[in-house]
Image 1 (cartoon, rainbow, N blue to C red):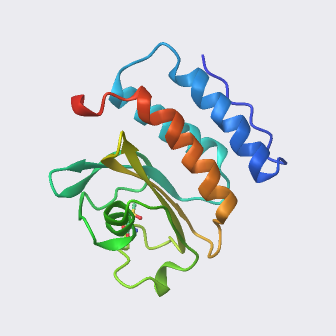
Image 2 (cartoon, rainbow, N blue to C red):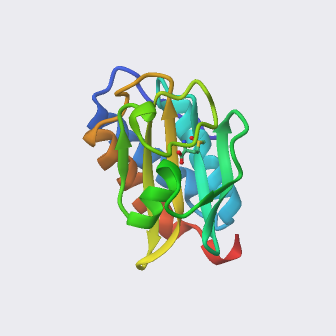
Image 3 (cartoon, rainbow, N blue to C red):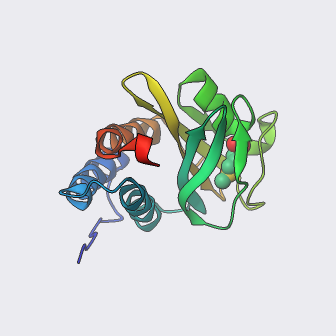
Length: 165
Ligand code: SME
C-alpha cells in the first residue's frame, strides 16, 4: 500500500521535491491512464494544505472536459479561452490567479475557491489538458507552486497514454 509521508513543515521546494519522488513511485509500473491521473489527484489532495479542489480537465476536441479530481463536483465542460482553465490551455502557459474574483471570466465551480493555479499539460507540443488546483484562501499559490506543479506535470505526462482516455 502506498504511504505518502510528506512532512507538512517542509519549504515549498522541498515539499514539491518529495512529491515528485512520491509521484514517480506511485506511477511506477502502471500504464493505465485513468488510474495514474486519479492517483496523481489523490496525492496532491493529500499533500497540499489549504486547498479545496484539485484535478484534471482533459482536452476533447475544442473543449476541456472534467477528468479525475478531488473535491466538490465541478463544471464538466470548459471551452478553450474560457475561465482560468480554458485561458491557461489556450495560451499554453501556467496561470497563477491570486484572487479569482479579480479574474475576468473566472468560472466558479466551488463557491469557496478564492485563488487558483492552472498548469497546461503538453505532450510533445500537443495540448492534452490542464491540472487545476483551487484554494479557499487568496494568494495561496506563487511561483514556487508553479514550478513544483509544472515538475509534477512533467513527470506525469509521459506516463499517461492520453490517446486512450
Ligand atoms: N475555476 C475554473 C473552473 C474549474 S473549477 O475551479 C474546478 C476556471 O475558471 O476555469
